[in-house]
Length: 464
Image (cartoon, rainbow, N blue to C red; front, side):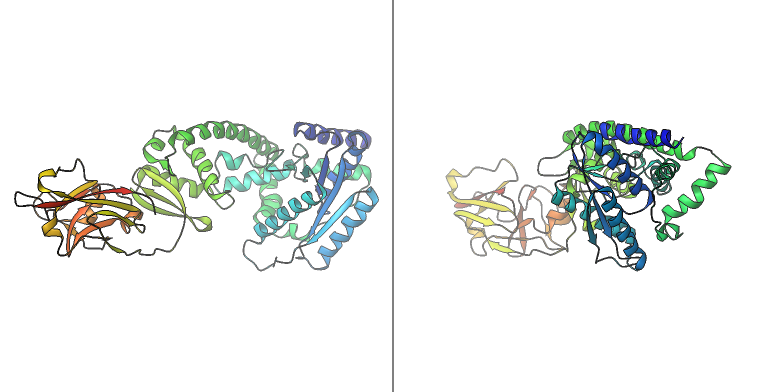
């Protein structure tokens, strides 16, 4: 029975490595903690080495969190690798503290950084970890409890991200313990796995056994199967979402809110996942709650809305554009630049350039749109024209309308993004606003029958 079990166990790992495209003779780094899972994996890989020519090495990170027990684990891993003829590289974490918040996440990050660094040092093509089917079931349950969607429920893949491979995902904890017993292999026990302070431990020790016993025998197996199905669905949705993201992207950055709203509802969250991943670099701290909040911002507004995201990022909607930006302190970029009546005036704070020329009365032509304006030179010359920043309370007397309007209301009507309003150039003569380039012409300094000469000014955006 022991011989048959060993053969079945080794065969499952061999097939998993083949599916992960791990070639014969590949250099593989085994993540070794000293616990039963990683010890079983190292023993199996050492046996497979004889036939497939794998070049094995192991890496052990001493987290320095459990005092003598951490040192015991390190010593055990050194002895095991010596017995199996496997090179081992040991590291020690110095920045972890049992009292720090998110200790589990910090330890995981330190471990990933260590494993990738060691893989680079030894030239490993793959990093093999001891994750198994029961780990998969626990992960799916954790994510179910936290409200994960399809992507979250896909949990751990047999390979990836990067060089990681997980050859034991088809094997359960009982399979691993039986294999270790069949070869008489020792391992160490991490006392922190007994702590009920961690959600995963409570799921492993209490929740899943109770469900298995009283409600749904075989639930762990079905959760692992759910992860595989979710991964297939997520892979398909991601491929389609990549095409849709390209279609709704706006030149200059961001996505079109109008085109996003027309997407099939099943694709909206996958599209946002891809977009946020491309902007943030990864989604480690972004969960379903954040994705749904960005979706609401796009579909329901407000049309000028800001949503905080983890890591100091924010989603910013400005009418039809939604962008991901790094959060920053608001600074008011005040400026006041005199406009030349003949020549070029650059206003870099606003990202505008103005070109002006003086024209005699007989050569005057009226502008075709609000990107150009013409002013009576005699009226404008004494005080001069100033391109200045917008100020709260600014008003304009729009040409063709009675009375005054708040400049802020003009911005809203013409859908000027909130983030651009503070640096939008207001063209003023003294206290009177004569022109909002591209938006509206005021009633001051108009040319008429008595005008002897005029100044014609055109504006264009050049970027800040």
